[in-house]
Image (cartoon, rainbow, N blue to C red):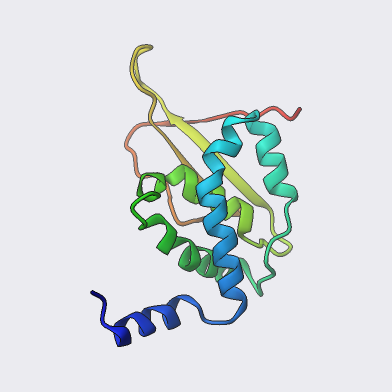
Length: 152
């Protein structure tokens, strides 16, 4: 059982202002629904919908990232959602909720080069604002080939 004081401290660290409660619920819903939503449509239209969505305002991209990552993290530790703690879900969540201000928000999807046709593809996803990567930077020693997305 969790000690009440410890639990209260954890809540205060996570929810720093009242609006964080509503935003964390929206982020949790997104993390839970994103795979099914993506499965029901093509990737370019899914990303277009995310790009057009309203984002919570932030003074700068770094503080926007800190807030979204802080409010997303508890969801990715829940037993039913741990399997979604991948670079793809984390990047899509940032792409959906991170306020880039006047900057250029980009989602990067890439696959590793050098696999045979029958191999399982390995890839990576991350988000950048004005070419500054947030969170997951590629660490592979293999060359990453960008995935081209065509608008529909």
